[in-house]
Image (cartoon, rainbow, N blue to C red; front, side, top):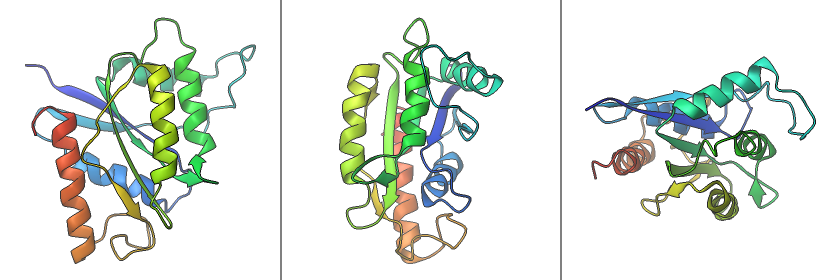
Amino acid sequence: MSEKRFLGICGSLRASSRNMGLLRCAAQVMPEGATLEIADISELPFYAEDREKTPAVNAFLDQVKLADGFVLAVPEYNYSVAPALKNALDWASREKGNIMAGKKAALMGAGGGMGTSRAQYHLRQTCVYLDLRVLNKPEIFSNAYSDAFAQDGSVADTEAGRALRAKVTELMQALCGQA
């Protein structure tokens, strides 16, 4: 059986993003036979139908095409999906051949209050259009301001951090069909 390749896409561009920390944690706990590459979407221009693709856009689209599935780290901005993540998905959605269709996706997020639950709900609606197969469980809506995260945004070695890592591990196993 060939290795499964997943692409992580983080909607936050902050250097110490807890959402990027979740993706780094996911990459560390991928089951045997699966890998998670994290996309750099920081150089993607805003999507416009008449805009030519930049080298950053082409590189991102190549990553999307090669991926067997996706791990989307969803920050919540104003009760919805962060613009950087939505922009990346808009670029992918306009590529010929519906390059995301039928692929699995896992959602996770770290934020204040309700931990990105509203943004994930909105993202699920976008995923319907993209024809992604989003996992329903387990759900990860983490409080970004808990002691589960270190100052650099990574998942901390605390009781809360270890519980979060276990939840991320469970999600990655489900994504890879090993749950």
